Every structure is written in C-alpha cells, then in structure tokens.
Length: 119
Image 1 (cartoon, rainbow, N blue to C red):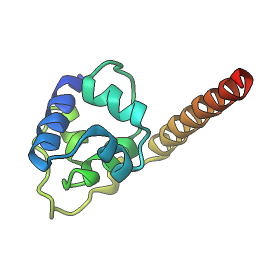
Image 2: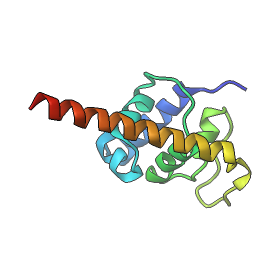
Image 3: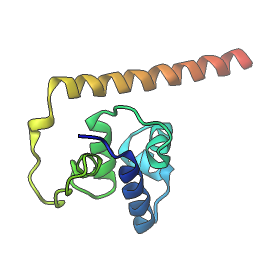
C-alpha cells in the first residue's frame, strides 16, 4: 500500500485553516519540531515518519490519534471518540520514533554548535 503524503499535507492545511492556527502553534501544541511540521505541511520531504509524529499532530489538531495515519494509507479516519487500536504500536514503530527524536536532537545540537562558532 502506498503512502499519500499529499493527502496528509492537505488534511493538515485544511484543519489549520478551520481552527485558525498556524504551523508554529501546531508545532507547540504537538511538541513536534517546527521544521518537521513544515516538511509535512508543505510535503517537501517524503520519508518514513514515526507513528508518534502523526499521532501527536492528529491529537494537536483535535482528531483521533490515528487520524493522520489513516489518511496517509488512504483509509477512512476514525471518529475522535473511537477506541485506540494499539496493534500498530510495535517495537519497530517505537524504534522509528526514537530515531526521529535522535535525528532532531542531533540537528539542534549542530545548530547550537554553529551559533557558538559564529560568535
């Protein structure tokens, strides 16, 4: 099954408009780095994302935690009050989330080091 990142981007953009939010506010609400929110929102980088990333964005947008994962796979999103199916909460999914977090930490440390050198 192919992933439809364009549909995810469209869903996020429509919901942001509906809620009157901007991407910085979404990043703050979801605790996802602004750069990642920007990539997903503008569909500029298509790569495997942690299920936790899509879950955090879904919840921050007032949707069911699996909403964006369903959109990504071309499925009908669950209703906000539907139970959460933990079948997708596997070790590989958790490792992918850790990898994403480590990548973001490394990126931030590189930015801090660059800023220090420029002083």
